[in-house]
Length: 339
Figure 1: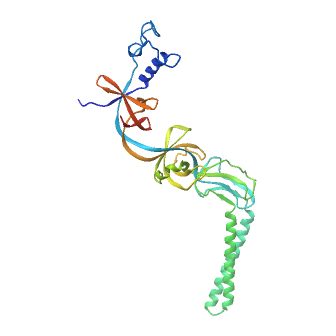
Figure 2: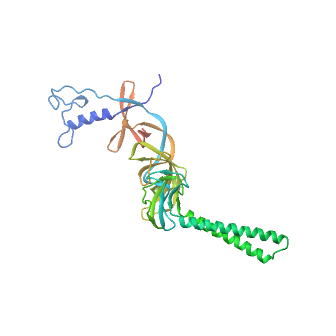
Figure 3: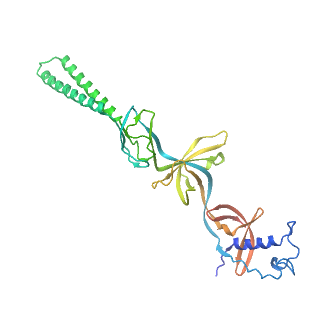
């Protein structure tokens, strides 16, 4: 039967060994002199007369070749894809409010209606004037075709009709200014006005955020600039959702390195259709800069002694301690570079 490389997950075994070592250590930090086989005290030393400790339980896992990633870690801030505070263009009184706090609205939805009685009256007058001007223009055009009117009279009629149309368009624009519309689809913030409020161009009405896509801005040291490019995959986590990973893509790498911090800003996009992420959230970010196949072992199987790393290798019924060179640690596994 083909031999398999097995790695003993050493958290149980290592913990037991540390317990014996700690209990049998003298006050000066050196191990006790009276040590029996297997690290047990000899004669009547510590532990004499007590029941023998049971061998610790261990778990055996396979070393395997798997994909491993070079990752840059950072902290980032979530931003809305689009965000604006709504205000009025004119000074007038709120006639109707058509939304509630936190509503999701589509682009073009009417959120606020201002009083418009004066503009409605002016609109009716402008329409009447335009109808009259166009009627006179048609009459003069008919007379001109029969040679019964001068060209100058026809020009005056055309000018009057054009001016009437411009006046009508101006009043229609004024009426539109009295409707506050959603500029894009998104989630509204808190309502800050009520019917009867006198709005001025600087009065905030509410905020609207498009969070179907979240922009995530984070900074990385300039040493990683060469490894960062649009299209790189990222994984972000939030303390609000500890069991969830948000995947995204790097869209833009900043054009300048900060001369003080020697860092550069990177922007990634994360799909957020369920609107779980909110603008302003702090996220931990991992950016995958390279992928390769490597030999990996379970993270729990590796134990450190000062600057050295070891595993236990199982050959049949025998266990051997073996020093290894480790690389990256990702998602519960450790890369083995050699050993």
